[in-house]
Length: 76
Image (cartoon, rainbow, N blue to C red; front, side, top):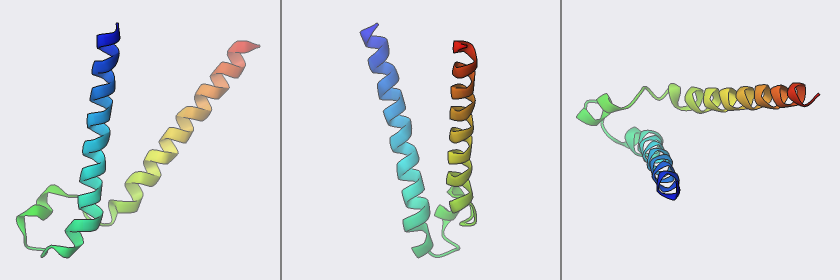
């Protein structure tokens, strides 16, 4: 079981690191690169720079609230 836990931890760490690197390049590096450069085809438009994290936080808080509500209802 310890090997499975390590594999899951490594997978989650790798996914988190890759998302962090992608978002950092998208927000900090890409505005300083020319708009006709090929690198811009790998990134979303800058309009989504705030929309994506806000919707992710909203989804996380919604699932957390549903989980807490489910636990409260289950415990009674």
